[in-house]
Amino acid sequence: MSFSNLGLSPNVVSAVEAAGFETPTPIQANAIPIAVTGRDVLGIAQTGTGKTASFVLPMLTRLERGRARARMPRTLILEPTRELAAQVAEAFELLGKNHKLTVALLIGGVSYDEQDKKLDRGADVVIATPGRLLDHRERGKLLLNGIEILVVDEADRMLDMGFIPDIERVCKMLPFTRQTLFFSATMPPEIQRLADNFLHTPERIEVSPPATAASTIVQRLKKTSDAPAAKRQALRELMQEVDVKNAIIFCNRKKDVGVVYRSLHRHKFNVGALHGDMDQRQRMATLEAFRNGEIAFLVASDVAARGLDIPNVSHIFNYDVPVHPEDYVHRIGRTGRAGREGYAAMLVTPKDYKALKAIEAMLKEEITWLDGAIAPEEVAEAEAADRGNGRGRSRRGGRRGGQRTGRSRSEAKEAPASTSEPQNAAEGETAEPKRADDRRNDGRRGKRGQGKRAEGQQSAAQDRGKCNDAPRGKTQGGKSQGKTQGRTQGMGDHVPAFMMRPVRVP
Image 1 (cartoon, helix red, strand yellow):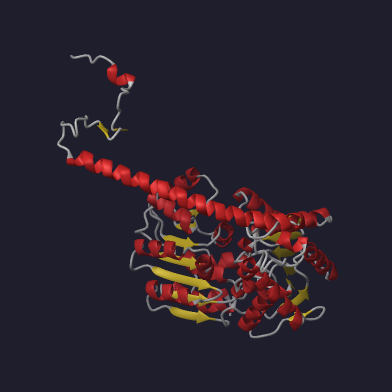
Image 2: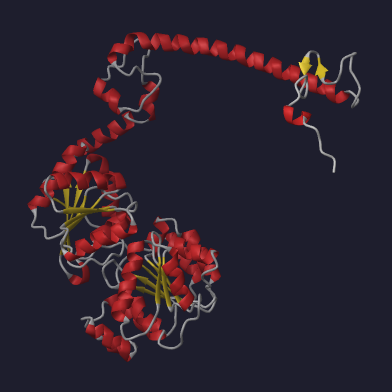
């Protein structure tokens, strides 16, 4: 089957052939003929299977008729990240070169002025992240009542990033007669409910089971310890054991991205970093350098895990086991794209064993270990250490029955600070009784202070009651109302200077 058999217009087919695409992928072959007719589509396919072209090509065919008006775009594409939005805009430039369409890219980290100018001229296609789209809408720069086609790309990523309420707001602003296309690699229940609410009798296209990895990707595991230095050493050994052309190294936290980047840079690796706190221009420049081969290794957070089409990524290294099992599929999906072979390896500590089992349960297969699996006793020891570092240890810490706990100084430094434990051995013998006495004395002083405060509040209430009971302008007990039982009311004898100034009568 070729693209000419999918119902696309001749201009679109010629642009696809000029771009070098000959055979459509399964998701493209099934989704494009339905989308061209105007029906709603719910597409589920693993990452790297060409979902972007599944909605870009039918949109180009349908947009050949008509033009957009100022501030009233005809189509809307929602993306979870700026990088994905910019990537879809590049796809429109490549595949829509035979069309004179105006594409507005509405993402954060960029000035509003250029975006406003494109909207004022009339944008046929708006590609946006939900936050920036709503900003333009609230500023009155964008009207959504002319939308003909809505595309929600990477819907499960929208859920993870908390964009579902924003998507619901946007969908309620759109015309009821629109066409809606949902594409995602996984379909959790929350996304299914959203699709049921805003799609009208959609055609469900599922070319592969949800949350599955491509069969062309070789997956491996490497055991390591929890010590940060040992873990970084294990990463370097893993990178040197295989023939790496270029690779993405995924970390769970932005802080770890910086730590791993500096460590690899010190060891003379050609490395770059990418995370959500970076400036947008810096992020785009880093991605472009990685695509061009100027950077061989890219240390990134999950901002690079979803939908980024970086061709010929040979290896993926997971420095951290992802928190959500679905993120593992998206991470390793950066390699082995479009039928190519890929390699993905992950560092696993004893504490990560449960998260690893969740990933294997989702994949319904076991991943091969490189140098032996983690022993059950190591897992039990790690779980016991976690329990020891939790709330129970802080409650059991300190002295019990006049005996010391026998914790070492290194354990005391690693454990959370607790007011009931001495911070070092030298303070242990004297500090604890003093703190106990201080607590008893503080309790007595606190009770006395509370009693005095209560008496003062009670007398003040009685004074206020007496003043309120007295007729206004009269005295009480031979004293003026301004003073009650020796307590000054109002300003007393002091009058501010500004009240003594003479008043000018006109």
